[in-house]
Image (cartoon, rainbow over the protein chains, first blue to last red):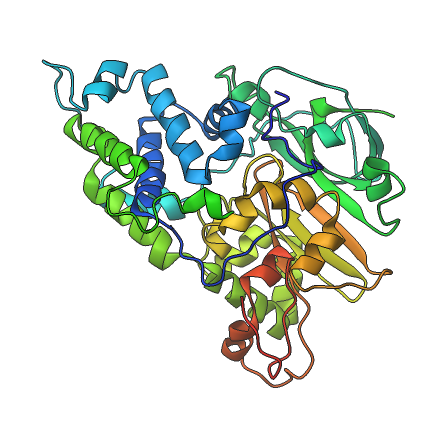
Length: 219
Length: 209
């Protein structure tokens, strides 16, 4: 979707403001929000791409106003209702609906180490032939899907050179909508800075973007 | 980004979000959907068990051990796992070597993807609109704001983390560090130097972010 989350190249946001000695979390609610999202993930109702897309769906003015974890909390509150973990009435009343039996959490304290230090690769062992190889010139397609995509707007309809084939990775554009993983070859593609930003950019510089095969065409 | 995280500084009443998150957590606990002890353990892990210190050890070892550096540049996921660092958001690691000719800078323009097992959770500025919007379009201006001015003939490579591949910058080893132990070297390495918004200063110059 052409949302405000896709902000590469936009003007007007001001300077980057690093904070000295920044804490991991600024508020307890931020830490709890992160932990709740991680823990609820073990109900296996959603995947990482779905979660990202829910945050993208926050209306633009709200998205820009909210802090990072406010976006997380807002998206979370919506998705647990949408996916049937809680009802809207329960969120409003703060209490479980009368007569509901208590579930058993899939993630306990003992499982947390594995939840964070375990790995869940996004590569899939499928035999799909690669359409491109390192050194190939490619043009990104001029795609504007209404749903989730990882092809940034600033990189659409531009020519770059394939640097590396990462192998077949889960395709976020379908996975985010529970339409299957449809693994595709993922390529690291190099774009000259001037190809993307014009002559104001340095002739020395380049942008490297990881792009799925169906985002690409021959130039 | 002051407006981002200071809504409730200096107030005696708990903020709206404090109350809303607390209310949601107690509902989820009552329904048996989350275990509060698991939430405590997750927070403790992010606050105390993961952080840029992990990445500094990877960098120091690469500076000290040429064979390790070769492995790191060839298969960063495996080389980083040799030191015991792995986990969510580190499944597909790539190490980017800074040289006198090439400077690498990492961003995620679409959200805030970050190599958590080696750097911990990202700082607010990395997740902010200014950094996400500008790093790809004017990396040299952004770098100057971080105090890094690169000669014109250095090639700046910006890496936009659009997939599940996560990038760790291997900064240049500063002069004046010959004979230092891995531990001493690791203490010189900053988080920002592993994102690409900083350089590693020589020991006497100091300055760590």
